[in-house]
Image 1: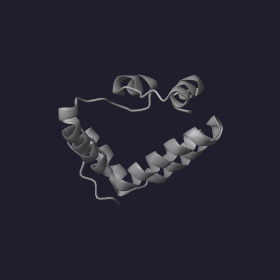
Image 2: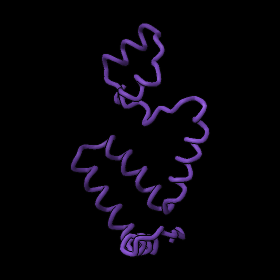
Image 3: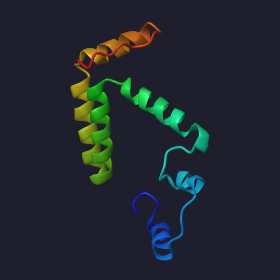
Amino acid sequence: ARVIGKSKTMELCLTGRMMEAEEAERCGLVSRVVPADDLMDAARELARTIASMPLAAAMLTKEAIKVAYETPLSQGIQFERRMFQSLFSTDDQKEGMAAYVEKRSAHFKDK
């Protein structure tokens, strides 16, 4: 209900109407719609991209997004700031910055 709004939630729940994929994307319920034949390839590519991130950064990013949706703005920003600061001292952060400066792919080691 929070994602698609009260009125859309009421409509869907009270009528039993099924939402089409394109409508779900417009409402922000899903991030992307792909043709059915491309679904597994798109899912695998998304998984590869996420898996290529440093584990700590991925986990803290997910947590920061959850906190942002569950707390007032000031608390969410404060949490994000603490998470960012904690990641800044990791070896993976240093590798990421070096890779960016050197215009190469980063090689993260989850440290």
